Amino acid sequence: MKNLLVTGGAGFIGANFVHYWMKTYPQDKVFVLDALTYAGNLASLNPVKDNPGFKFYQGDICDTAVVETLLREHRIDILVHFAAESHVDRSISGPEAFIQTNIIGTHSLLKAVKKVWLDEGLNKETHRFHHVSTDEVYGTLQADEPAFSETTPYAPSSPYSASKAASDHLVQAYHHTYGLQVTTSNCSNNYGPYHFPEKLIPLVITNILQDKPLPIYGDGQQIRDWLYVEDHARGIDLVITKGQLGECYNIGGINEWANIDIVKLICELMNREFAENATLADKYPHALSVLEGKAQSLITFVEDRAGHDRRYAIDPQKSNSDLGYKPQESFETGIQKTLQWYLRNDDWWTAVMDGSYRQWIEQQYSTAG
Ligand code: NAD
Ligand code: DAU
Image 1: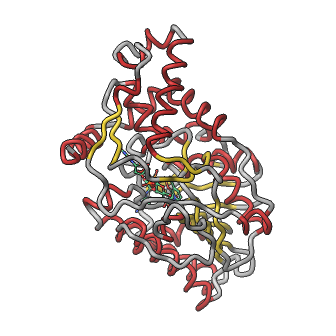
Image 2 (image 1 turned 30 degrees about the horizontal axis):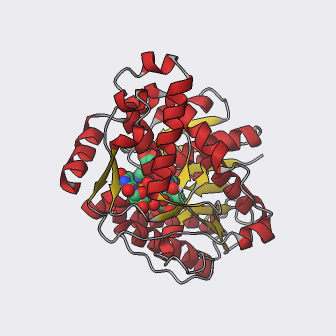
């Protein structure tokens, strides 16, 4: 039986990971530490909230003393670190929070685990710090360049990716210097349930349902490598259970799509869904374009993101050969599950779009022209 501390467990991937872990390892105890920023949502933890092996703590990872107390009190052996500021556009308009949480916050966690696990000796031989990172640390690829491998040099280009790169280096430094037992995973773009509707896929789905424009940055030909979120959770599980200490593993879907193509695909799937399911017209009476089978008429090209990375792609060779990792969900099944989830869970996505979020996104639309 293991005791896990999951930071950022009320966010998109963290919550999906907690659901996955508690289903897969029902004997384990899972404690979530989350500051509940705009991106964190307790409702995303509803599927596990009544499980006796689960407990939620609201708190900041920058509060080292709180983390130390949780480590001791619950005899934590595995810390899985998701907590972060995660949205590239926000890092461009306000980088400070990214430096604070992603760099200072990660260092605060490292100080806490070093003190409790190494200096005080709790779980000295058996502890694990798993750091959840991103493929964005590798920078951008040209169309003909090979995908990112674990030996691709770091070349982050946004304040977000630079802050994640800094955190990756700190984690490695604590392994090399102090012998902290760490692993890191660098994953490509995730999609799926509980994804905050500021990111491309949930933004497009929820905007179609509200008959709002679908903003495409620049020429829409930027490429991302999309992975269903549960496949990310499965990959992290394999890194924790089978990965070598001090190693980094890339996790990806071998699923590259240009943004404009993904948006057009979602429009087609939504048109079809509305044509085949008459109850949707009652549920979403204001979704005029999709009700007429013309969701794509909402596509609107806007000013490009500053410093926009052109292409990301993951070479999953190492996680495949060393861990036996392979995504289980195809893009066809994953995107269908995601659409169905948003169609059913309008309570969730309307609630997370509170006043401050609306204000921020409206400001983005107006500055993007
Ligand atoms: P998210 O923005 O949906 O969730 C982040 C969570 O962290 C929220 O619940 C928030 O409340 C919490 N948080 C923020 N600051 C905190 C603080 N100071 N203390 C405690 N909690 C805090 O992010 P996500 O998309 O779920 O990403 C999770 C992790 O995975 C991040 O580290 C991100 O860099 C990484 N990642 C994301 C993707 C992706 O496609 N979304 C891909 C690869 C890696
Ligand atoms: O690659 C992993 C990363 O993927 C994670 O580390 C980040 O936390 C996560 O947010 C994501 O970053 P991206 O910037 O790739 O995701 P986002 O959904 O913001 O944008 C995906 C692509 O779509 C990107 O090329 C920008 C573009 N885009 C995005 C939005 C929100 C648009 O064209 N219009 C939009 O309105």
